[in-house]
Length: 515
Image (cartoon, rainbow, N blue to C red; front, side, top):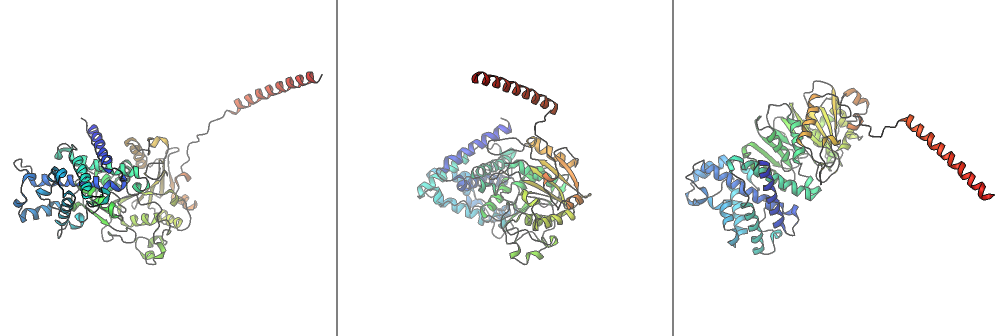
């Protein structure tokens, strides 16, 4: 079986489990139980492989908890970030799931123990609260203990039966892909609520490639509004053969999504010491201000959300916003995210940010911020992508690429919203690898392409009131039918002749009647 076929089969089985066990519960609310169980199995098997260390004579799952010495536990936590006793492994808990009358409370105790094992260690902030949304006592699982246990057993058994192959060969990729598949499907079916935290994989791929373009090595990569971490992980996939020295950083305001992002890091085999995902409002409580600048920044922040803006008089003096001399409107925080990202960007790196199109042509404070960006030559490229790529919105959004190392005073505009740049699908349009490669080639070469791409001198942009709308500079194809005037005149003449003949005939008929 090819890897593609294997992945497709695995995804179909996972989605079936999700549908079978959710019953009457909304899938979006129920996602954490399926996703959490998948994560629980992953860390159990990952930890088992670490403990066994390739020694085929050891089967960690069959050992007694009593053989674990404090030294073994301490060393494991320092390396993996957490500890799981043999009795706490997914395999052993699932084995007795159907007959365990205390399943829900035993699971809670296991999750609490895994999390608390990191207490006092450097990994504590990365492990703490990982299972917080996996509430084994929730009424969404059932109204009685028995019904809760029955649902939990179905989830455990369903995930247990999934065949991931040999862990050391391909399981990491398959676990991660399965996880992203589930998140994506939940997001797709949840509409706006899903789109708020999930960027479709192919869109993430394009954004990551834009931010990492031609960099053989980056110090670290940041997502200022991390969501489920999909953008950061695309950076990892793009950079598997390159160097990300200090790892993956992100900030997320939603607690549930913050947990998903951390789980997603582990599921893609990014150890706790190689990522730093933090909880909090990135605009009003930024957590990475003391970090040295980032060589790569990717983000799909929420479109046009409200923020405190000038209601907080201290923000205008904030290092992130002060250079522009104005704050983003309180009703539209888009440019607050842009300036925030720009402040974190290193002199050699790029930031690629998904933006609502309106911010590129509206007046007021947004125009003043555009002036600051253009006059300081920070805007490398603005790309209009196809409509209906994102869950929850059909808008053809823009991708803004920021750079602090431009060697010319022009700004590139790319219209990648046409049918040559996406594939139509049932629910959402899709970017293929070929479309991404095509966009990246245009981005790289910076050559004008008729009806698609043009580079405009910043002085012209200034004369145009700092309008950065792609459609203001890229002239689209005239799709109107061409008309041959000579042929049209000939046809009109023939029609007039016919009309005149018809009128003469009618006049003759009328005379005959009157006579």
